[in-house]
Image (cartoon, rainbow, N blue to C red; front, top):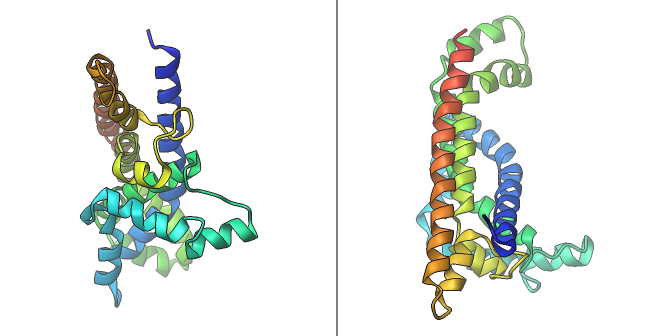
Length: 227
């Protein structure tokens, strides 16, 4: 049975990961579709997309803080023009998580797009289907299993994000404290090992469920596409 505090932590974790996935998935699909095709500057874009994986998560959070903090160029503008404040908020935690899971989504979607037969697009072009029509009627349905599997994997990864979130959004109970941040917090308390282990088991279970779910969803969608 979960305690009230554990329920709140789980709720925050699901909320942050869900927002992160919702914000990043459309952009990730667009970038992945672009990267699946040859164009000038592709190598540079590919490198920028994968920066959050290469850089330490704490550094990614620090860069977000520099850009989106109250004194940052983007953060100051957002606060003055739209009244949006991201630092040390749940939305900020979701944004930091979205940045970290973005490469996972792009990679999974790109592999799915690259696996498609390009002759299908040529045939659709001969039938005078426009670029958007070809994307939504051919590319997106065929890449669906890979995109869905990537989304579930990214959601599970978002549930476990630590470095970027704690740097950009801090560790505020009921607001930005997700499962990994809660584990870190209780480990700082004397005798907190038991609660940390309990939270760690919850985190491990959710992560494994996400990975297994991604595999089953991908197989289910493949069977549907194959008739």
